[in-house]
Length: 220
Ligand SMILES: C[S@@+](CC[C@H](N)C(=O)[O-])C[C@H]1O[C@@H](n2cnc3c(N)ncnc32)[C@H](O)[C@@H]1O
Image 1 (cartoon, rainbow, N blue to C red):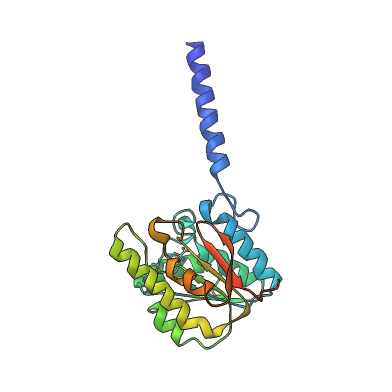
Image 2 (cartoon, rainbow, N blue to C red):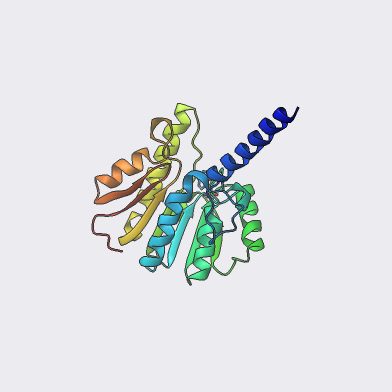
């Protein structure tokens, strides 16, 4: 019986240690309990570069439809970069085609008191980007959901390429671009846009679950 309790105790301890090691928080920037898992490394690098380049204008396509609770699944980027924007006198525009996603994201933005630094727009991202005429310091592409379906994959890849082309003229030598959901079958959301960017004077800084790119002339 005693032996059984020891083994059980060790098993439970191992389980919690494993959970702790896998937990990738952005603490102290975000509360410890939120797990950013596969996006933590790229988010940390972006936060560092935003600071170094004194970024002021951020655009995100695809908003945080699960608020901060979606940190592990979706990224919760609206809240992460919205919070950074608030602390650094910058501004985040987040655009989404779904009323439901916009409403949920807006609720979290309200809860986190980020309204003075974040605006969520209800629109197709390409239409929004085509009409956007300010200089963009950081562009985060994360809209059209990727899936196992080849047809959806292709549509998502084409959509993200079109997003980039729609805002390309507003990017400058020190702009930063991050693309989500890339390390997935058939190249993920970034396949076509990364191919295009590499032919147009951009280089990859981090190639992981997300791909982070800057121009060849970039200096931080
Ligand atoms: C993965 S979620 C975005 C997650 C968010 N970036 C985050 O970090 O939590 C994808 C979102 O893209 C939106 N979306 C899909 N197609 C779109 C389009 N054509 N234009 C704008 N948003 C779109 C969906 O409604 C959904 O809310």
